[in-house]
Structures are given as C-alpha cells and as structure tokens.
Amino acid sequence: SQKIEQNSEALNIQEGKTATLTCNYTNYSPAYLQWYRQDPGRGPVFLLLIRENEKEKRKERLKVTFDTTLKQSLFHITASQPADSATYLCALALYSSASKIIFGSGTRLSIRP
Amino acid sequence: ETGVTQTPRHLVMGMTNKKSLKCEQHLGHNAMYWYKQSAKKPLELMFVYSLEERVENNSVPSRFSPECPNSSHLFLHLHTLQPEDSALYLCASSQDVGDNEQFFGPGTRLTVL
Image 1: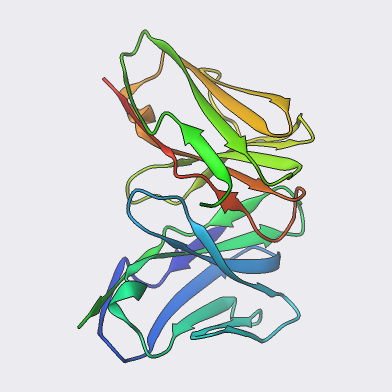
Image 2 (image 1 turned 135 degrees about the vertical axis):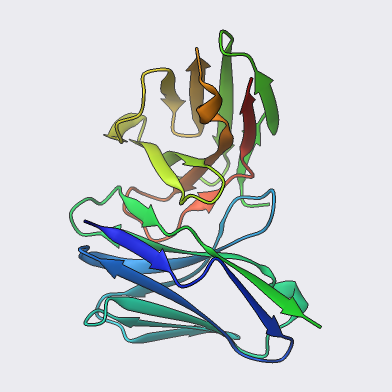
C-alpha cells in the first residue's frame, strides 16, 4: 500500500539546536516533495520544494534533503527559535497525476527557550 | 496574507441544513483546490479545478458539491452532512495544476451537530 509517514507526532528540542524532521514514503514515484508549515488555526504555508533529481535545497536556516533510494526526505532547522514552533507537513507530488499532492500527517515541533 | 480568503471562518450546522463555504483568491491563479483536514489525519484532497473545470474528484460523497464559477472563486455546497464531516476545510490555489507551490486560505472550521 502507499504511505507517507512523518517520523513522530511531536518533537521537543532546546532553542539553538538543530531540529530534524523525517518524511518517509512507500510505493510512490514522486516528481517532487514539498515542506509546509502550519500554525494553529491557519492554513499551511509553503517553505521549500525539492525535485527528485536534487539531493539538497537550502533557504536561510532551512535545509531539505531528498534520497529517492531510501525514499526519505529530511527537513532541518538550524539555530532553532521558539518562533519555529509549529506543525510541519511534507507533501509528495506524483508523476502519475499532475493535480495530486499527497500530504503526511505532520510533526508538531516545539522549541523551548 | 496569503492572497486566499475563506468565509465563514467558523460554521456550526445541523445534519439537515444546507450551507456553502466560499473561497476567493486574489493571485491570478488558474487552479483551485478543496482539502479536508481532520484531527490527527493528513490533509485529504477533495476537489481540483483548473480554469473552472473540475480535474480531480477524490471519491468525495455527493453531500459535498463544489462549484467554480470563475478562476477566482470556489464554493463548497454542503447538505445533509454527518457529524464525521466536522473538520477544517481548506481552500488553496496555485498558478496552474501541478504547479510547485500551493497558497492556502485560513480554512473554515465546520462543526456538524
């Protein structure tokens, strides 16, 4: 069966450390993978996209890696801050259907001061 | 904020009521989407419209009826809903179907009594 799993429901780390979130998938052939941030009571906000032929993407304190052999993406936030606390969603866009994006259930990240 | 607005933000309805959710995007995008987000479940894609034409319908019960009168507006008409339909309903838009980034509205929190 096809699945997208985000490593844990919640992650709690100390301010200043690097937060690493994991997204694993099975039985999909993604064209690209996206990461979104969602705050309580709000819609998701796009952060980064990485294509299947790219290994790594960076944007300020954010870094995403994509390993199509392991079928895994890692999302890193360096020098984490309490303002980074939110739920982070990964999403796959499929080759088979241009209109279809499949979301994971998210990881709730808490950064404690 | 994101250029996508949704009304109402909160809605409580009985199982016999008929109501409509409205979404408007001010971004000049060609594609619009409806998603359902239930507690502790991934975002579920419901409908996709491209230039006012429905291109995806993910086995959604007929008690949900979408309407896209033009590329800026999207409606979700609701009738004879069930309590399990209570969720956050999110609208999103993108430049084109299959485009990289989706812009989400704030959502409508729906409660069915």
